[in-house]
Image: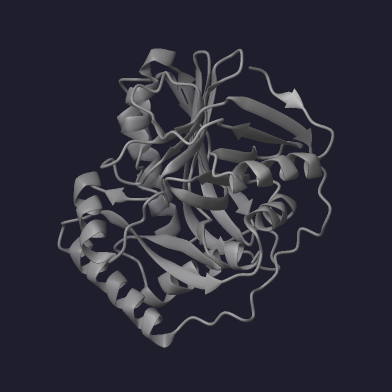
Length: 355
């Protein structure tokens, strides 16, 4: 069904609050650089899984393929115009301090990864960690703060009684498709924003980004025709800079399942070679990522059957008065453990700043 227009954001938020209090699945979200918030509500608590990617609704996929993606069915849909109501300045969370033991643990983790890369076991691996912090804000309050502060990101508030509550503001597209028109991006490399107008990229970040771009081009070669790759550009995401390459082409909609399975997880969230990197992550991270570095978004929505999927980065899982924030970074042969630690600290500020 087409999205029904609603009178105000507060009206949509109230409906969402009642819906979620009744333990019914739903999602609120805004696509990057758009001025409307969409809501999809499912009218029962059934857990629907995506198997063929011909299903229609909002998909929420895990990092690992040991469980199927979850689909929120669009039993009712709302759309409301949204206007930013506060400063975009990214606040710092001065109350949270990283522990020395966590810093040393992560640096040791990075050192082990670099040794494996130099030994030839891996080319790249993405290492992550989680941060648990208390919060008094409700998911709806956090979602509104994300909307205001990250207009260029895909912002969402997702809930299913069988899975839990997740919110986030991710800068990274997994794939988009309308008809035969297909696009994706290779996003890698991270620098903190400074007073300088343009970031100065080192060889480590450039090489990391090229690894991702080459990988995406290779895995799509048999599925996407007329592939075109843009020049590398620097893009802002909150308080960070990233390197981005846009990849476009033509693909049949019936290849959607194969494309998603080839793309996910990309080297930007897992590593290379894929199986070796995934095994290293599972063996060493000491926690389950669940839906962090998975993917989410619209699947076969609207008259054009649009699909817009994003990588689940800059996100958190919300538990009772507690937020579990996930951050990570790509490790290559040139990685410095201290700098990699600082990168995760910088990334954590996206979510810490809205709590």
